[in-house]
Image 1 (tube, rainbow, N blue to C red):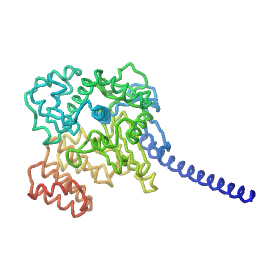
Image 2 (image 1 turned 45 degrees about the vertical axis):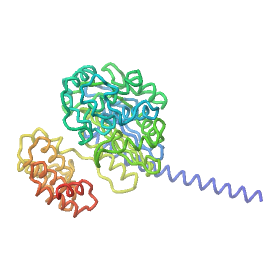
Image 3 (image 1 turned 180 degrees about the horizontal axis):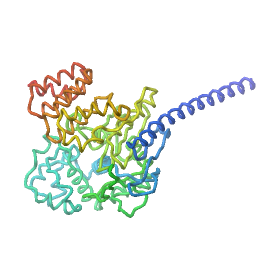
Image 4 (image 1 turned 120 degrees about the vertical axis):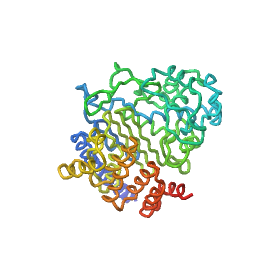
Length: 465
């Protein structure tokens, strides 16, 4: 009997060792593929930063690529802190919910209750409106703002809102600024101290820094493609800078509800309307579990991206100090690698590479440049994706060059006639140009190709009224 038990135990140990060996071989294969993607992207000049990939909480890949700044011989490392842009707004959103759980505020409270020095319009704005970016507060001229008190003084001089609070979505840093001011007023400490003492310290996040100074060490300095470094000083305070490992600790704290409850987390994920940002970016709760959490952030030439898919056990964290607008493309390639699917190499951005020229060219000249570049440098750009001209078209829309955008998006539908996204974008261009009839035609075409496309469903319903 003893011999049989020993034999069974031995077989179990051997089986476990074989499974562990197979998993390690699989992890090494994934790690090598991820490294190849990232190394090639860096050598092509389209990624400078840090990356961490985890599967079920186990680190699969950690990498640092390039210098800590344009004017530095220092190489990036996992210790370097990055400005994570809008992702840092999660800290004020979570702080608001912490105070709510402590019965120190209600989301339907008027902000005038906590900031009585603001004009009468503050009585119409609820804290909920700040969280959903529907306050109607005019945006500040951020390049002219010299700190928190200066911005508060500017808001005191505002005479009316841009729209009635709670009726429209408008992403605005003044919503963030006022959240932080309310946290400070209720807690009796600065917002930065609240984050340090009541959030970072309890979570064991030891290396984060808020509003770093140029003299602070291990700070990644952002820079553009011309090698000019950004001014590190923000117009308003409260921006948490994280290294890649502390970034994961923050994500894990949200996933495991270490600071706020599942109910509060779910409330932070409710957008004003589908597709709009929330206090946590975007995500989905299921049975008191945060199964998906995605948030990106940009601050001048800093960019960050968090992809947390708990249903798949996958977390991807990307940080860069040289904006290339490709973090989602990188994350998609990594997700495909982790799922053993075909993945794309990271290419240059056509818009970023040629933006100065594109601002001077009409649509026909842009198409000619595209065709010439495609003939000469096919391997360097993503000519096989509709996203290339989508980027160009939306840049034209931002410049209010509506007819050029329509022509570019129309050309894109010829290049990718089976892409619902291409027709959806063309519909947006027609709509912004004032041509509702043609917009409706394009949105309907998008739905024919993809009946589940939420943006097209919404616009067909609105334009058919």
